[in-house]
Length: 328
Image 1 (cartoon, rainbow, N blue to C red):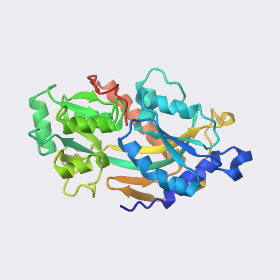
Image 2 (cartoon, helix red, strand yellow):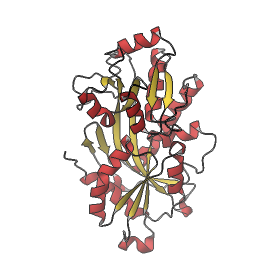
Image 3 (cartoon, rainbow, N blue to C red):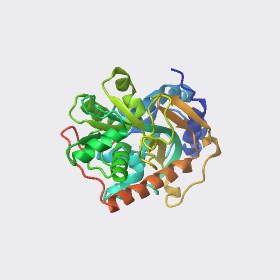
Image 4 (cartoon, rainbow, N blue to C red):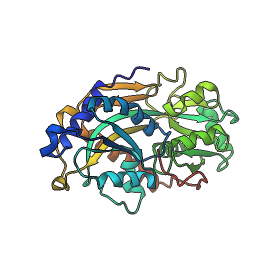
């Protein structure tokens, strides 16, 4: 599979150099760069950055080392990034959970605005609503009818509290007036395994993480959550097309670095080299080498959406025995 990554790598490389200590910038990088993925292995975010890592290493001339630091809804890994030296050698991976955690958690070990410098929006990943083959629903309308006929009896898996998979399904519940119980897992990988194994019947997760299982018949795709159909799933409608007008939800993934201490408390201007056109990074994902401020704006949009869902009573949670509900 060909991944046209030249512009994405240029965006990341440019900003890594931009954040290197001034005295050492001309020699950057002189050692491996850590890429902190604050989620369990096997989820969509982990997979995307493992795909990027070899080319990033090749272009840097130093290893880009993926480090999984799962826990706390991504807060453990992002705390490592916040407390790292702001020298360009530690890159943190943020997704929707990073943007919504300030609205979900009473206390964070860092300030999401003050302690981080946004690097680049890297991917936009559509989600897909899928069910175990045993579920008697082969369309969104049939799933809604089944849920309304059995309120509180159906369960859905997510990759953790505050994750895109959680928020997307809560939005679906809100717009359809259905009562489906949330079961959070410790990452997207365990959530998919649970649905394939029949422990939980429904999953709204990233298209890339589900694709092989849909093709093999272990999962049945009902719809995609983006505004347009996804080429990776031909013939599968959007949720809006399938009968839920106004519905749209996607996952985003981007880079964050520790902000220079002297710059904390005010935003730094976007770096021109971090501008890039949209690119597809594989089946079900699209790369966006956007300006660094784009990731911050998207995080703010999702935070506002979370506040609205909580104000209107969405978000029932059942604890899972597979982990503590940390997103992927």
